[in-house]
Image (cartoon, rainbow, N blue to C red; front, side, top):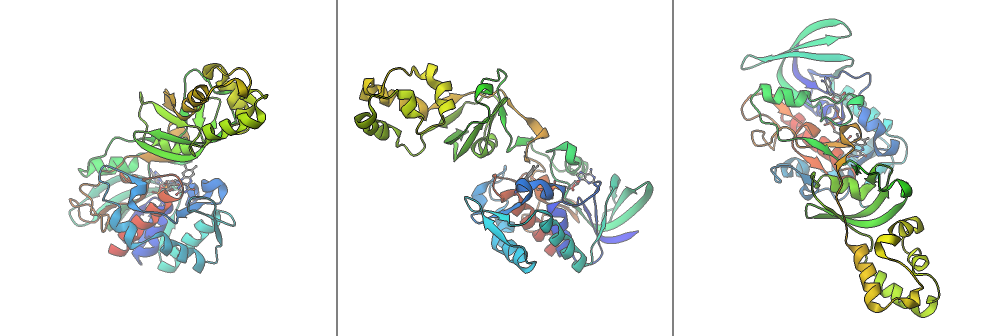
Length: 389
Ligand code: FDA
């Protein structure tokens, strides 16, 4: 069977690319349904983009690579698309846009766009041998037990990264890249909870607090959640992309730098109350109890000198922690690293070495922050590729 374009992977990027690649496009996926990660994303409401998307929200060996695609298909273009399909949305926080309804609305929108573009979709299809004769690819596909060879001028690899294998994630994109001589950068789980071998936060599991978390020189101001196994919450997931084994994480539990002034003022009016009680007005009481021995909290607020209050607040502003690891690909929202971008055109996502071979979405070494950035990369890279085909 001959097609013009064969797209491997019916996730966010693969479906969006098919909507732009024109007739003669076939999308294949080994899953039972397309867009499974879209379905579960954003707590079922899909955080489909971020109003503040820009190249600075992405990590990768070449920080300039994402610029072209992001500027030619922007968050506003995707918002227009969503509006044309009658999908209403709201901003939750920090520019993060979610469906008012449910994530399957986004999947249906992409399926409708694919149908309008004349693209076909084969599910439950496994990918076997891939060869290239210089002008066309021949890909062996097994569709529900029937083996076929599909020939295509363009092969688009949109099979994503390694996060959440239970949802069908595989390293296929990396294998194909290597087969055709492309390098793959080191990959690791990102946007992932961090763990401690001693379960030190088990007693305060479920407690959340706003904080500034710094890892690898980059800081995020969002909530931290203490868990049985370690640390989670948006600030930690963000920091996990910058943290490496052996690194220290810095937590500032007074990111507004107001605690010292506030405690000194409270000392005038509430001096007879315990320091831990008064701190509990600003931080979760269970967290204060947990930290009390390390901070040496004792006595009333009136007993604390200015220097002592400064010492306590300083310790809360510089809480250094050394996680032992992360929850890994089992729960990571994305894979950091991927197909090296040095031999990929940033304008078309096409290989500079193998004509017709393209990589899009999470498969590439482009990783966004938490908050809709990864889907925006999927849309932008897919449109760059689809329009160029
Ligand atoms: P994606 O993973 O979406 O699609 C790849 C497709 O390829 C899948 O359909 C898979 O079945 C298929 N495939 C893989 N291997 C194959 C093989 N060997 N043969 C055939 N098919 C194969 N991002 C964001 O911006 N906002 C959000 O709210 C969230 N929320 C979120 C929640 C959770 C739990 C996760 C795990 C991830 C997110 N993300 C997110 C990240 C986002 O889901 C991710 O970055 C994009 O889905 C990447 O899109 P791709 O199309 O590149 O890969």
